[in-house]
Image (cartoon, rainbow, N blue to C red; front, top):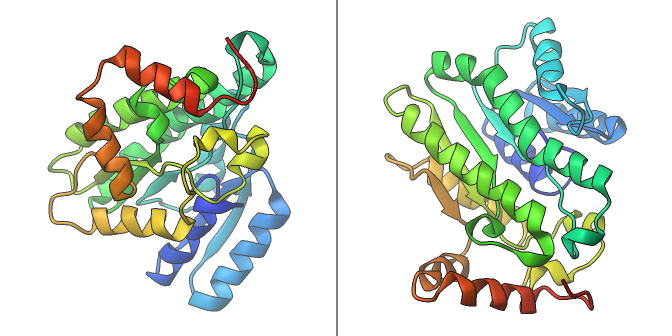
Length: 256
């Protein structure tokens, strides 16, 4: 599981440990991972290993896979939860920050998924969850790279859902919407939420696990009735109008 040092990743770790799952926790902050691993082992009697890694680096996913296999772990599930965004007019963004954003939000997702999907399919009973975003469903002018990256994750995951039918592997693209995590601290503004009320990580993870517990889970799910209604509403207006509306909702004094 990536992104396991905070927010949605921590909540996934707690809920999966409570279900009896052994866990490999991946994130940059080793101290947080080790503390979480110890807490989970003590509370639930499972095995939890900390695997510190900077997923923005090229080949980081392959390196994580090698480290996991060196410990003789055989994963049956993968949750790609790590991610971050940038906010503001694209022409003012730091190029190195954008490269790191693409590395975490796209590169690591593809790299890790490719590294482990053979094991997941062979196990025939696990899950693959890739965390997308409500920003995946339309262009987001003040988060152009983040929205495009999450659109990739959504499309990529839905394609894997189809290719995994009949294997026993359940695949889901999860789109949380605004969530009460460190995301907005990292991005530098709460304006990226577009004025919506952030939901809790627990609500996000509950939705994901309930969805995967269904007999026939869908390829993707948006968290919350309002978010799902918004996706339906988008079909009734032009893309031009949707983009202009989103730009107005997520403006923080900067213009393109």
